[in-house]
Image (cartoon, rainbow, N blue to C red; front, top):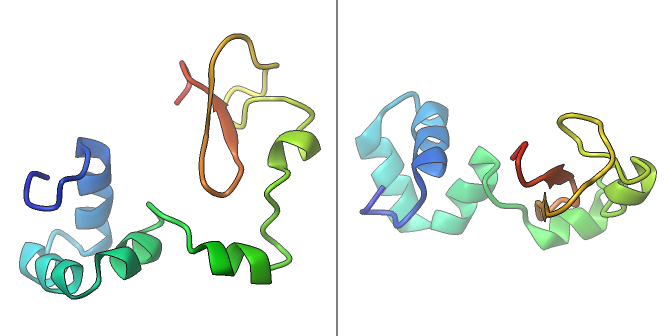
Length: 92
């Protein structure tokens, strides 16, 4: 976590993707951390978003203002991922 300067949650995601092989993760991370984040799903390549018709940044519009976790209307603060999915801050 401290070595990569990532949150606890992101560290777990990275390690799970690499089947807890810290040496391999470190080698790939220091070779290209952006590529590792995209591979593990903790970051999104904006170029992919522009090219891929299946990815739509208007998720909030298509979900009619509902949280993608509890499916309730947003009340108060909400969080948004790079891909456009929005969540209640409390759910996230």
